[in-house]
Image (cartoon, protein in one colour):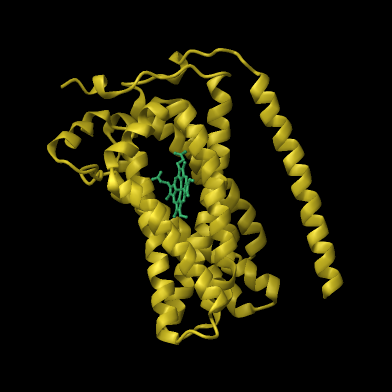
Amino acid sequence: MNPASLIPMAEPIPIHWAWFDVLLIVTFAAHVLFMNAMLGSAAIGLVQAVRGRSGLIREVGMKLPPLLALTINLGVAPLLFLQVNYGNFDYVSSVLMGGWWLAVVFVLLYSYYGFYLYKFKFETMGAGMRLALFGSSVLGIVYVGFMFSNNMTLMLEPGGWHSYFDGYAGFLNWRDPALYPRFLHMMVGALAVGGLFVALLGRHQGNDGFVETGMTWFFRATVVNLAVGVWFLVALPDRVLLAFMGKNLPASLTLAAALLSAGVMLYRGFHGDPRRTAVWAVITVFFMACARHWVRTLYLAPWFKIESVPVTNQYGSFYLFLGFVVAGGGLMAYMLKLYFKSRQGRA
Ligand code: HEM
């Protein structure tokens, strides 16, 4: 079977594809930053609790429901932009994963509910029950992340889609050697940014213990992630790897910028300043998201060129969208201003 026959035809798009790609990368970077803060700090709190120090898990547990809500909301935006430009690949991979993909909704609900129970029933629950609930909720989040890595890699390889016909259920992308380092890179990154979040929390609350624990996790996880990143790079197909090694100049420069930024971030982290380190972490995640986008473009090159998708040049809805972004952003800024003012009053 010719795998190309399994790729649906691309639908026309209303405006130039670059708008959607930029919005996809920016919103994905925001999604991943919140996911990292949520999952990373939860995992660090859990490890500390298992070691008998439960101050951090309690503090972090109070922040998890809003952090998870923001992660999910900021995931919707890239999902929409992804479907506009790459829907003919992403819809297929979602369908091919079958039950594994559908289960994401239920597992996410379980974890969400688990974090809420942890927060609001903290006093009335036994310590063992609390730890079990928290631990299983963190595991649920890891499952969701793994399903995303499966989906995002499966969509890139129509050559492997025929496996669907070998069985009656959905399948995961186990046969892709890049899946493992890619997922690990995301998870270790979550520990690093989660550590930074813990350190920022400590700085905000004047808790030096949190600052030290958070910065230690940040530094160690980032050093480990440099090695995992190299594994990820060499696990990519040769043509993608060579493109990053100089054959494709913009892709190579993007990766170089991401690595340079990671170096500055590590340097800042070494000097123990959480705020400046956080600024460089945001810059690094943005450049890494750009490099990840190059991975997608290079993988899909034999099957699809985004430039070939017809554009209808209907800019009306886009201007409406921009108007809502500006007006919505203004309203949110106003709401936050009122919120902080009322908090000052209460204090
Ligand atoms: C809260 C649990 C979640 C976790 C731990 C999580 C984690 C991840 C990870 C690790 C990736 C990168 C996968 C890879 O490239 O290998 C990813 C990508 C993505 N996530 Fe999430 N995610 C979560 C929830 C969501 C939700 C609820 C949505 C949508 C409503 C969402 C939308 C997306 C999209 C669209 C991408 C891919 C963006 C792109 O390819 O540019 N995520 N997520």
